[in-house]
Image (tube, rainbow, N blue to C red):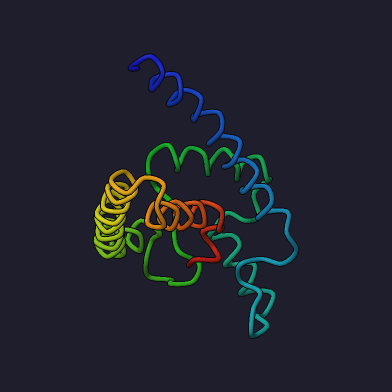
Length: 147
């Protein structure tokens, strides 16, 4: 079992690397920039902003800098909230997300175990078929529809 878990963790590394690479290049090659929005900025201001965030550097330099920052756990500055880093925003939101995730997990365990016990005790009855039907419906419906 430990060998299986270790193998899966090692397989996740290239997968994450590929996802990071694809997302980086898709964002960089998309038209516009994070700073083109509601109002038009003067070219001098836009040049200063691009220099500050190293957007004028060659794309491969940006990419390797991005990988280095990710390896150190630095997600960089927020483009939307200028006085915050992405790490600050994630850290401030994490406790709420953890509470919500824990509550959802415990609710799912309680409901799932209860439904499983009912289905096991009432085999081949309407209760069993109802519980199994609800379980199959929950598996089939995509998460974004439920959310």
